[in-house]
Length: 336
Length: 290
Image (cartoon, rainbow over all chains, first blue to last red; front, side, top):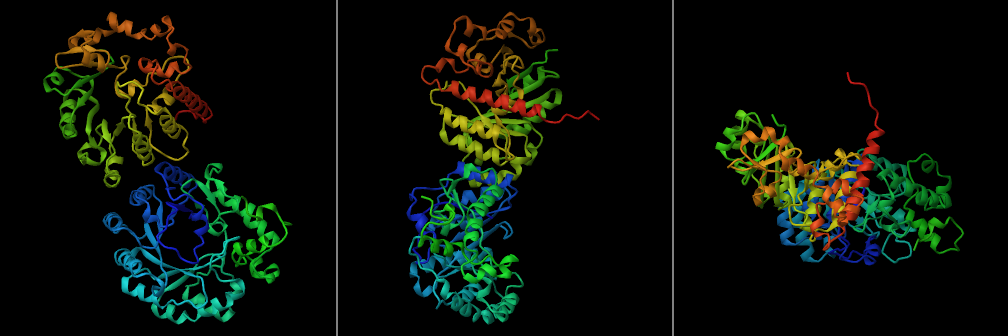
């Protein structure tokens, strides 16, 4: 499911933000237009795609977001919106009126939340207002960027607001050449340890965690994988591949951390499959030839060879390449 | 009996006098649609109800289930609230309706693209205002969308008409889309004055009078002359006479050519699109009829 960026503006400034670099370089007045949205919807339709994600920045800063959502639904696409839930009162009223009664199989939200202890109260209030109204359509999204993370509040939110019983777990990854906050690869085992310590909570609250991209399988022991298997209902993923982000200016890239690599115009492609193939062949495969995963042991890992794990987030490898002499495929260096 | 389709206002006396004719009724209000349909189909055949109401937007037209299967074309002020349009889409898609918007407002190009992509037949209504306010580049974008987009979408007129009816051996008059081509449509008023176009009817340029004269219109001198009027452009060697896209434009914008000559580029591109359409149709497999 590709991502459409409706706007480059955001209402928050999360320390781990992997879109920060991209947004800093984009003019804030860049907003998705109707003409571009129709073009994208047509491309998705002819590609046989059934769903699309809307994101930003904060997508609810786009004045036409409600119209866009209603339009995409009429184009028979499932719409998933990544939001902080923070929006103006006017926009909230509009969203409540037109979106809150849509069936969950057509519209869903991923509300990205931060620990309430570090969130300003005005933001929290708005996020809570959103969750209260749209809870039945909403999964929580939680980005982990430090090893002493807390997740108790997520379960509280799920129960308090009747949210979907699923949490999208993201791991903050490096932006090659930048200084965002992320978990360094040598600290990943601690992340895994701490995450598994929440397994009883997931079990007790009947909430399943879904890993976003770039988490290597080998962070977890066999025993931990067994626990994960149970709480995830067998749906375990340890992948990293092109997500496909499309900007308001119709530029396309593999994913936010890799937005400076092989950025292309959407008009260069005939289908979503063409885009995916391009980023597989010209970025992911080329990097994996140079270094198959984020750890040295990835080179000989049978699970990577079997395709169960892709060897962690590509951005870690690319960050490593930046600090050495340019001896590799030219595609693996920042393309500017 | 003449094969012309008659375009007239909705006047029950006039309609009563027209028997077994195909009729386009010009109506001012959407609310009259079911009644017009009933009256016309009693003794005639309704070709279309042509509603012109520029105060209405698509969002505030009271679409109803009893409009199903009634051919309707409408020229309205705009789309209005997109949210309200989305609410009406399920019924709108069921109706036999074609929605026309003016090309003199930039946002209408976008709105036509939205409608077409949502499966609603629509089009540009040029009207009589010349071309100086028309953004031909936006027009070209819309035409490209209408003709070349690979995604399934509803027809946008008059582009669809031009590309599907274009024949390199003869002129293509897209005014048929607006029921204004004398080869196919004749216009008459309550007094049974007959004119070649709606504009002629408004200006009192009648070619004959009386319903009975319609059947012999083929021998009417003014009607015969109208068929060769296009030759005037070439006798005078006006600018349109050298335009490569003459065959599909027929000099419709010649009066305002001095203010805006970009129509040439647009119609040349439309001609290319028509050729493209023809060549792609020619490649399609033809099976024998069973």
